[in-house]
Length: 268
Image (tube, rainbow, N blue to C red):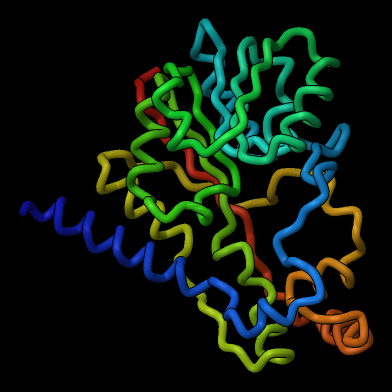
């Protein structure tokens, strides 16, 4: 086994093991009044006229080097990442496991006739064999849902001609509620894995990304107010609302900035 193979095995195992620690304990989950995993299909839509973030600007920069201007968006949701720049995309294939969100994306894309938009419902690994190659492959806020980190990254790279643009939070998306889990459930939640693990995996694969830290994609969040969505994610009941609001007013939600990784695969 080479040093690279050994390093890959270490990072892959560490990622999978640390990711599994984010599962909500069964004794908490079984007592939850509502599922912490339910999201409104109208959530995660783009905010009209919002400034573009670094991820969107990076996609545009890569597309400026391409004639076909084709994009594959893995985990596209309702289109917060690509719809604001769809006027600069000629061909878009949007993948997501949530059919309702893709319906929102397809409906909104009708106002951008410049882009040919195709949606495909399903898991990336299940759909991968039916995919071609695209100028730019992007995936935003998906990687923490993936157990097979190297398989996912290799798949994205294999379908890209010019570059891959990834966006994720610096820490796990649930990291911000760690102090609240400790207060209400006396649970010490994990702090890893994080974006540095993804960067390390890319370097092992021979790709050194450019890294940007900044604001996340502007998107319409859940229609539920913060108190209600926090209650649901913490598996609490309406009777806890006063205590939850007090905790929110104390500022116990941890900061979790957005990270953009830009992987250029061809020289300009």
